[in-house]
Image (cartoon, rainbow, N blue to C red; front, side):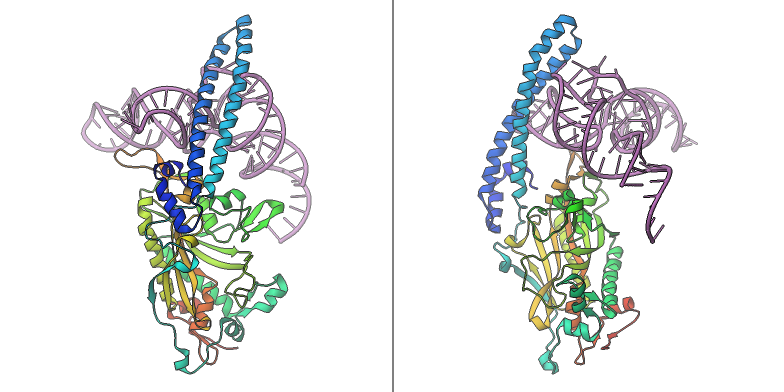
Length: 426
RNA sequence: GGAGACGUGCCAGAGCGGCCGAAUGGGCUUCACUGCUAAUGAAGUGUGGGCCAAAAGUCCACCGGGAGUUCAAAUCUCCCCGUCUCCGCCA
């Protein structure tokens, strides 16, 4: 959520941000108009209330007939206070509703436009030239079946489309990947976390998801709980309604969780294999820091993601996501996309967002202001970034495959697979 | 699943429907005292919001969350959430 004071101070900036996102620019003015009305109403109702409070003190001291007279008089006042307060409350609620629709202010430098308007920041490594090597690469599912690593058919039998079994080396590979990610995170000073995957509506909404309209979210209506699409939800909610001490630097958590996505509206897209599935596992970095440090932290999260990609020896590129593709909470987002040979395309393996103070404001996460002339509290910045997911298996299998269908294990991953250097065809 | 108890500030813990933003103790900060430490004494110690150009100031709100009763609610009523105890059930 955006701070109204910032909006009031700088409306043009927010209008420009909306424009770059291809979003509704007029929302800014609507909010400001409502804000003026709200403040007027609040001032009025508080003045009335102060009058009532003063009156109340006289009532408390009065006795007998005098008291009766005062009571009769104040009753009317109480009514007008009630009325004025409810008007003010209504306006506040209305303003909040509008404010919640306003996405985060984009960061300077974010390319304007939609999904296809990203900017490629860099490209690392080169896709393998299978033609030169003299064989046609198999796709990850074919490989997964040859290795006895992926079973989509039985997944569908049990749970429906986009569900799967990872078995044998497939299961081991995923655990190895996630474990390697966790180890790296811990070495970098992150606190490892295994998070709840069912959360309350407030938590879901606090993180920036719209539980009423978001078609991606699985709901458990009977219990009013929501399955998370990422551990970011739980990790962001972790410190909700808290005031943090960030004097010793950022608070960093690495969350390991299963993630659930309905993938509504993606019918026919990525239907083969485990590229796009309803359930997968992920290790996610999450940082709480000051707004000033958030930009540098964003670079650090990206660097840690790249470190992981280097360990699994995949060619990838880094893109700066365009404004229209940022989602509600992000001010800037970098994706790392690995080359998937049989698709002839780069596909997202990681994503890191700087949500600046947007999430924190909604979740009410603040920091104590320290230093000269600083007092009070202010919203912290939150950031997140992917370290590993089930989807990585796709790129790993395809990129490291051999002509016979076996797959070479990247060196860094071998210790996590009991020294295995090749995943053999069964 | 059934029965009951409880939820107050950084922590512990009082609180009669008005004098309670809230006693008291501890912690913390600053100052004083002390050769150092400890001990002691004094003062301070929440958050959000409105008015104000801003500060100062002032007003409003906040005692798990939300509704209600009342001129007036931490205090009464209802709902929700959470914690604890007992019984049952399942591991």
